Amino acid sequence: MKISFKQFKQDIQDVVPYSEIKQWGAIHPYFVPIYGKLVYFKRLKQSLSLIKRYTRGPKTIADIGCGFGTLVKLMQEEYPHAKITGLDLRSKKHLTYASKICKGKSKFIQGNVENLPFKANSFDVIVITDVLEHVSKPFQALDELKRTLREDGLLLILVPTESILLKLMRAILYYGKLQSDYHWTHAINNVNQFELEVLKRFKIIKRTNAPFGIGGNLLNYDAVYVCRK
Image (cartoon, rainbow, N blue to C red; front, side, top):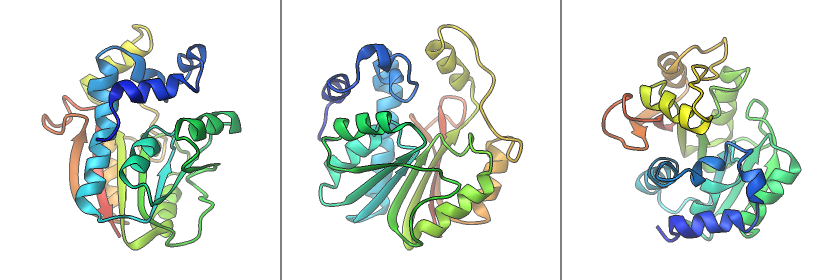
């Protein structure tokens, strides 16, 4: 990894006022002691490691639901010659923050995974982290991911495991208030049903967990699916 966690946080702080950092779940977890490094940052590194393992020099990469560009920042360090695009529903102000955090080296646009503003077969790699459990039309979103992924491309999906660890993390992040809502829509009720829908559209070449990998769903925040068409 070319960037340290300390530098990573500093790059965020140089752009986003801390008063705003505390308001946004997309970046606030990185500043929670221990948790930020051992869970959130480790999850980014694990995602990058999987991309490196299953691809060779991707030229076009998309991070769907990119937030403030945290994963994009790591990917552009690893693949400086790749064309990387971050897409998110957030306001233009937040996407401007993302662009500045990434030193203007990647493109950030406002958009919706259910209607991706990209041509078919646009990307060698698509990453989508903790997004599909939120959308109102998850089947359409999966179809859009398939449409925009190249035939030999790689899709990396992360969705909540609904584990005990996830509940505890939410309790920490939301000031001791235990939250039981994992935002799965009425169309998909849990991670097992979600996996069946993924299998209808993609080949799952690896299923693991994040951020620890081992320990199944009990110790991990996310289920991770490495997919091809």
